[in-house]
Image 1: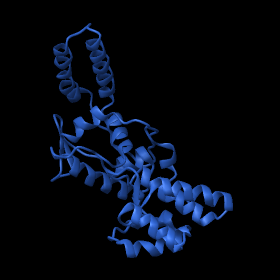
Image 2: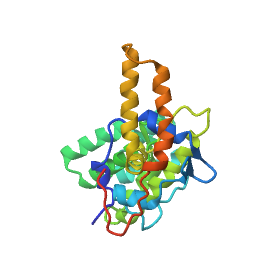
Image 3: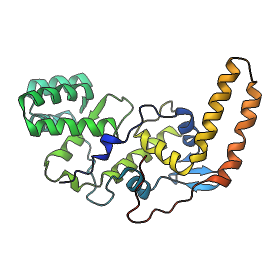
Image 4: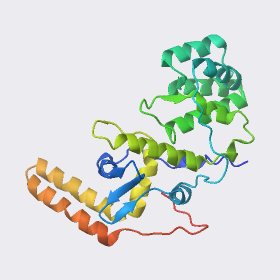
Length: 254
């Protein structure tokens, strides 16, 4: 059956544009979950997630019930096939109901060699969402809570993964918009593709600014000239913003 997670294997930026993303994060309003831009309020919608990433937005909500170390023990033993001692050691290493992504990779390789298909699949899927839609600030851990979503490998495709991805990103943007926050986490590829699609002209502006900054370093241009040029992106945004209404059947390849 269709798991709904296959697009995550193919859609990912190795490096996100930190400057461009930061500019949008600074304009995020946590109260209404939208970007406050010169053209008005805009936000990432479920249509964006569905059409740009092909993730399902219709289905069962992913449960998000808090779990502690005791509650995390049983899923590790039952669903990943590790013994009790190994599960305890990993939870202690992570200091909470989490597992390391590197630990999952090792499990995956071991189970591939011994051809334990169900454990292999769960280790791979948990690692996949831990690297993409449910990335946290550690960038190295994933909550055992999400392992419960793969208890039944025949039916985990029933979840609305696109909804879960968008909710998680909203939460991370809400945390990152405060001045004291130093880091933005979450599936940055989702935000990057959204910006690239709706603000395509900004890619040209950013490339030009990066080139000008390089010229500054070698003495061919002053920094005042560069920052003067940056003011034009506000004017261009009013003119070149892509207002696109997705229709049923539309697909976009990032």
